[in-house]
Length: 373
Image (tube, rainbow, N blue to C red):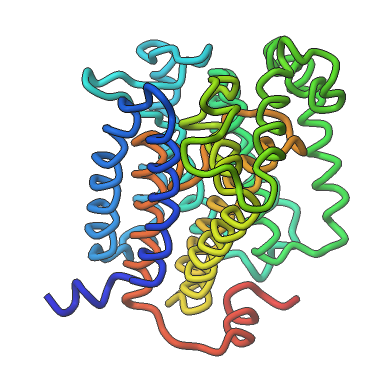
């Protein structure tokens, strides 16, 4: 029993509680939001239970190539199966309906990609400057990226790209190669614009470049979100008193735009505290990365930090109008089971790996695990 208690990073776990509470209170403050507020505690309990279970698993079996290949192959097969049995929601065929609830495989695929890249880079970090390893890792990411993009789920695809790009950077890629990587990304985006993006996705990007071009159409959500955030001013309007929220101007308040609803009611001060708790979670994950037993554990924890940070930055960015609307949830705060379980599973895996980690000086960890700078 003592081992089970010590396996949990209580600072990390407790830091998620205010974020979870903020999401629940924001949902509850909406009229007619009892459906979401009533189901969210169930998902929270399930997700936290998953975290506890994951923190007590010995994840060293993930170092085996055969296991990683199996997980990656299963992830690809599930994404392919979606085109035959997937349920359509908000125009995307990205859900598997299981009767009382549905799951979004793209969420778990993010963890699978982190595992795959951590395994690949863990044995090649010294020679990461070799273009072969950048290209091979890019192929792993590209396969799942394309399958998610054509659902179409551009938001999850963007996170998959950011996970790959971030893990390439922390793996020790020379800075002189960055321009080439950015160039490749620009070419990929150009091809997606021509061959993959749906009309509504192009509208979102064009609206991002010129928000006033279609306020009543594709720019409506972004416009209302910016108004909600701005109207919160310093201390907010109070719980249940957000005009954009109460008058139902703000769309998708329970998922994509929950930060805008929160910021309207709690203002800049409340948002600042929210950022602090996210910072604590990410700090604890990075702390675990520096204490990883091997390259694999270090890179996995770094991948989880990139995963959570990307979700936070993209979601809040689109809520305040500096990034296009992509349908990305806010970690630990938005309504839903798939993303909550995935996020807490990732944290639990980091905790589980930390059980057999070792204490090292941060500078030594950087040189040993991530290669020379």
